[in-house]
Length: 243
Image (tube, rainbow, N blue to C red):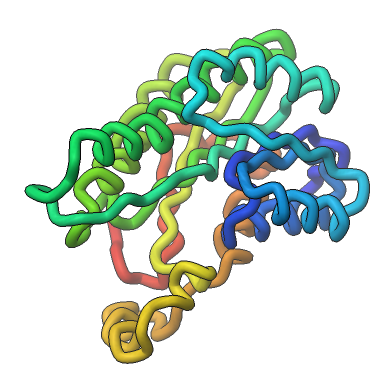
């Protein structure tokens, strides 16, 4: 698996999975531009992983995404791989979800992914090759209590990615999804122990996943080893959901 000097743009780099993505690609010698909104965590990434590039950007600024991708392209000297990992949750039972909370989750999780892909593909077409990896979620397939907006946004990414994969397969641009199950992050660390035990009991593997599990899959999809794979969703969930 050779990703040395591959130019990789990662959104949502300051979360648990985002950190693991940066770490994995860094270890494999890639040129990385990591983006996010948490300035403190971006600074920590910069200090821990020397020579990576950092940009702070809010993905709800849709009118600025074209300019943002242009600047990333210039800073990296190209874009070989786009990894769309950014996303938010605003959970509530459906009848209590406000229109604003529905729209915000769809806008950031789904619409921003569409716009990032659209602009990145324009760059990849010039190079006649590229890889896009969209991080979705197990709840896109199963649904989840209180997450109708989040599940809809992540399911939308899967359908969108399949369509995109068909459109650009002949242009040597691969678009795939990774669907993580329950991964050990700061978010899952906040779950009460009794609820965590119930959750783990539903996972055939018997434990929560690690960010590295997702990052390993992303590295494979970014490499030449996956050149004949496009339009697919790879499930990283310990057997909790099997397509």
